[in-house]
Each structure stands twice: as structure tokens, then as C-alpha cells.
Image (cartoon, rainbow, N blue to C red; front, side, top):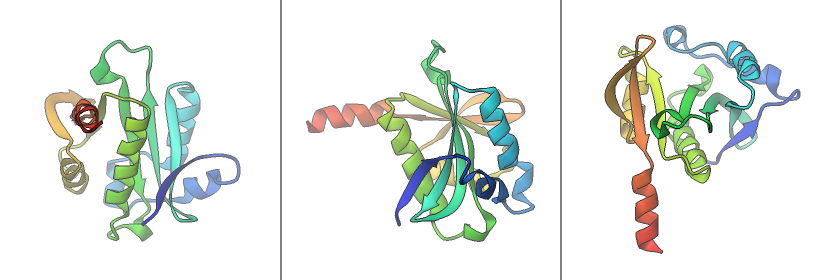
Length: 160
């Protein structure tokens, strides 16, 4: 399964905005049009991407890279992550999350932070499988999870 993250531009924006999660999941994530507007409001920090499997757009993700934030645990956030309802249950979420983590690694992020509602069990299961752990904090009524990438960098140094 070949998953790629692609910049959202005038040619793929409408398609991205048309992607939807299931009705049940809509309580957990903002719509993509709202997220893209938020990206404009947070230019320089927000990094929105369409998620593709081959040439088919299957999802959306948006990161926050706040390079001026001096707290390494609050510098790099996974703000949005969704797979279109028509593409769920096929392993795309797991594969896309691996590609998202790789992006953060390639950008030399130390810690990826995200938050979600405690009742979002499906997403929590996916995040736990990828190594994210709760840190006991809350963010706007959501639990905060972190993935420490420094272990990955230490392992890479040992291998070299």
C-alpha cells in the first residue's frame, strides 16, 4: 500500500473538502473545509495535507509546527487526521499514520502531540498501536497523547 501526503492546492481542495467521516465519528473531528480555513488563519504553523493511496485521495491530515515554541513537548502537533468513510476498515488509517510519523521524523520533531476525546475508542486504539501514550494532561476536554521520537533517533545512531 503506497501512501503519500500531498500539499492541498486549488486543484485538490474541493475533493479534500468533500471527504467525510462516518456520522458517529463527526463528533470527534472538524470538517475538512473548516480545518483548511483554520490552516489559513494559522499560516506558518499549520501544515495541511491530503492523504493519497496511489492516485486516490483517501483522507486529510493537518499538523502544527510551532518552531518558536520553546517547549519541545508542545512544538509539534498532529491537529487533524481522518480517513474518508468509504475507505475505512481497509488498513489505510494505520498506513497513513505510519507515513505521518515518518513526516515528523524527517522534519526532526522530537515529540508528536495530539488530543482526542476519551470516547474516541477507535482512534485511541490506532494511536496506542503506533506508540502514542497518554500523559495525564487535558486539552479542551480531550486527553493528550504523545509519541516520543527521540528513541527512534537514538536507535538510528546506534545502527550507524
